[in-house]
Image (cartoon, rainbow, N blue to C red; front, side):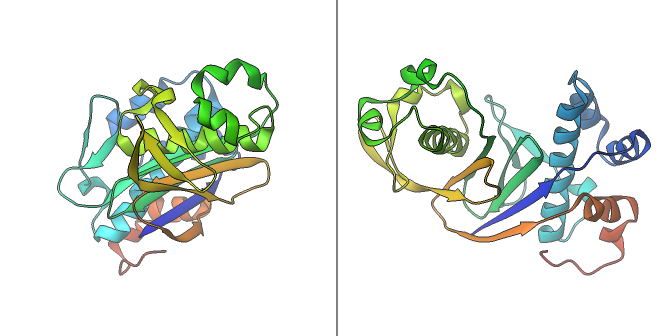
Length: 229
């Protein structure tokens, strides 16, 4: 099964931002601070806190006990556990997926753009099935493809024209059906979100920044019995 955790980001005072940042490893802090813009730093930090909190709860361990390995394309996975996870963020939202099977997730904030400039990433079949100059179709297919290549663990190094996705979420690569399905997740009318996996989404849960603050800064992991929230 797949669990989805969604956090709507709120503006933080600088003091609280740095206190929460200090809850992460030095390596992660340096990665976050390399972003030039505050909003990018905030999304990256909240994403790290969100996934660490949920993984720690499910594995009944402290966040500092989680260890990761990263593949050549930048996808993270836990080193000694069979849980899989993936993170995405856009605008005011950070979203993560956790599953016992590989999973990819993507969220995008919908906005008007020159959709015709993206024609080279769609297949002939997709151009027949979708009206890709329409915002809804464009963002459905874009998040679907992003979630699939994140499921693969290859990201945008994969040739997007080798992938066909139909309106039912079925995926084909190089003409062969892939045993996964893309599912759309309703978060906010101004956003589009898709998750790709062999499993179905069972839960979508909202997590607040206050919950992250309570968990990390008040040591909830050392004082409570772990339950999925």
